[in-house]
Length: 136
Image 1 (cartoon, rainbow, N blue to C red):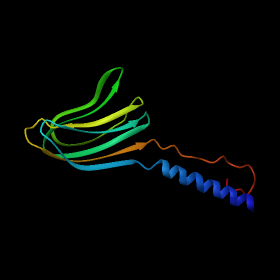
Image 2 (image 1 turned 90 degrees about the vertical axis):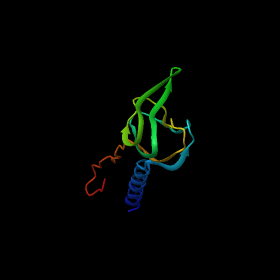
Image 3 (image 1 turned 90 degrees about the horizontal axis):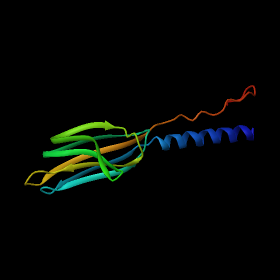
């Protein structure tokens, strides 16, 4: 009986750990970008993760997702002159990726943004038992 309780406790603990690992990183904000200014949100990401983003701006902005590697800047997403967008991006390599908004205007721009970073969820499956009547 004690062994069954231990097995159930371990199984429950694995379930909770798997559930915690699946919780995405969520960020949102409402900011003002000064004339010719920028706003960046950066996060370390790796292959198997993806970012889902959305934003709305009061005036046109230049938007990109970029990362730095080998002393160069790479722009896997570039969208100039837009007031809103939403999308998903999955990096191929581990690096720090930045969402960046540039205000090309001579007046401030209000920006509402949100993003979530998701991890690839791999199910945790307990090893099956060969013992008759066993839960696992």
